[in-house]
Image 1 (cartoon, helix red, strand yellow):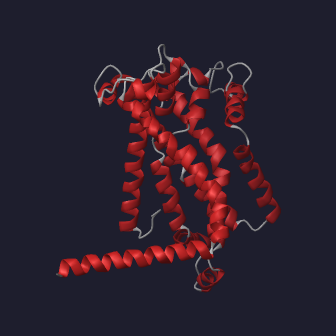
Image 2 (image 1 turned 60 degrees about the vertical axis):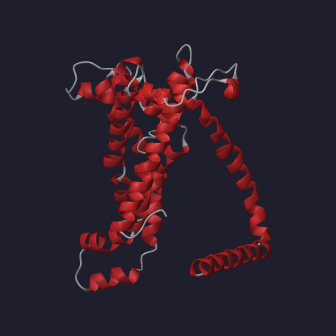
Image 3 (image 1 turned 45 degrees about the vertical axis):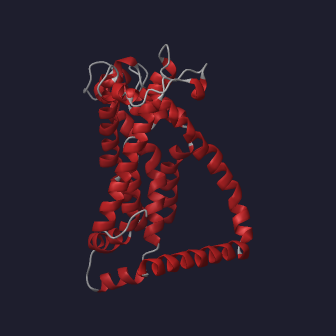
Length: 325
């Protein structure tokens, strides 16, 4: 009897919730009408294409389509993890993790330092000019930025080689883009150059939300600038830092495909071939293209990224009491 009563109460509560939800939609229908195009776009271009993931479990042929291609189960995943494609797959995984770790280790703190610096600068004109210069690469295409870097690193005409030769570090210019040991450093530098200016604005906006009374009270207590930054500014933007860090962890297997594809050469595959370029190459460049293997690699990449961001969010909720959800 108690079980039936609990079930009836849950059913009644669900009905009341749905009635309340429907009333909210009716009362706020203009907002939902504005939301409708976004929902349609999300369904058509984000959720509907997910039906194509069946390719990862097939020996896909474009002439047979997904309906006629034979189903092979986990064969493609076994080939990636343990079979004929495992060597290049694990190399791509290793390179992606290392490059993303470089980006988090060196690229993640840099915008925080910039935001703190801009918050402390009192010369408005100098701050505006500096922010404009740092923001400029963010509005340029990645093709243009990579092209500028390649031009700077040319062995005979590049400004970097000229500088290193003139100060005696090098005897003659070298082509950095063909040296595997320099690929990850150049990749990370471009990422910092392009994204630090914009990311610093996020932290600067968070800093402006901190009450000035806290700074004034700290100054009355004798706190110097470094102490105010350490005890007020950084704790004040910690939720923003944690949120962006979780996002960065979730993208650890999603290092910039476009940048890597523009920079990559056969001689730098050993350190520069990441998951994005590996998936692109086996799915489009190799002959014949292996669409099923490419889809399986992409699905594994997305699944691991989901686990990483969920784990980071769980730890953040436990330790810092804040997270994405």
